[in-house]
Length: 498
Image 1 (cartoon, rainbow, N blue to C red):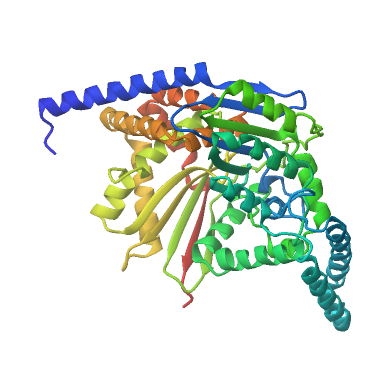
Image 2: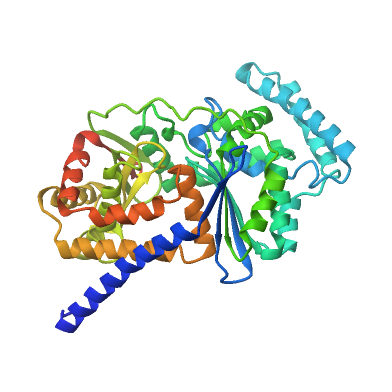
């Protein structure tokens, strides 16, 4: 589009509005977000936004796959599943039968696991007998409780966006409810925080194993990603898959999950965020009443084995009956390191929108890629992580041709200063995206709780934009020259078997 004087004026005014808007928005948050910490260490963030008579409620535990115990990968993820199975008071139809059958199921399941763990030396008849007994006990147990009772209670009371997720850094439970149902949420969530019952444990463990087969073993993107991460990290637990390694999932025990729950889902490792139409003092008193008596715990140390400097390119190939894919990753520092902010700008320059460098050059001009995207802070942000590229070559181009084109774009960052107009345009897009992400109650609750858990202070939302404003073209070139180098990268290619 031809840039007339009027268009220049429009762009200048738009940039000014975005900049002033981001500052005003940040100050508005500073003035309105209420942060309180209960005596047991639980952090509460409250933001009143009377847009509609609803509230979004987030619980973030600073615990994810990175915190899984050795030989117990997948524990955080399976625990997320199990916490939807009810509590001592939510779900049972016959409490005595529920408790008795659960104990018998646990004993039989453990006995079966011990025999299975013997591998080739296992007694086939014993395995068959124990499996039949477990199946029979589970069938009888289903008569003693109502399955999915937590989901039912929420749905009956107008819940939307009810979900949970496990990442490398955090585990999250969230829901949006009418404002007059906040106490129901507090009763449910405090109860499953301290009195969960792991009903249907062994059948749910089987569900997770099938989930892994579908999303990783039988999926080209999932398989390539898993192999890529395990090659990029050799010592840090970021190398572990969130869902867990197959042999670990198969033998996860309820006791492992109970220990994880006690220490990692402790109140002093938890952030609760409420955003929407409510009275902050009333909601805080509710949270204090239902969560305040939960005892704090000694939480495990954040210290892990550090990933050593790479010192040379790593390359892996994955064979799969699918179209080729390419992944490249470079090690980088985590927040709040200044260079982490610079990588956010580099990600936006290369990959955000149809005017980004990767899209314009690799997809439109050269036609070497069907898709080309960059991502900073993979797979998490609590520890040093990766700046990564994901791409699919366009036929007849090969992954090697796409890889070469990616390095040409990286070389441009290393050799040429990004023009000021392009840099400012990218910053404006980042400001606009940030404001857009915080527009809904759910988006706001998500961001506040995430940065309070991961960065230790929700105000990172405001600091991020302020630091982004200071980043220069020279910062971009320096960071590209420092980190985006051959000795610091891992390359993974998925290709068909020949």
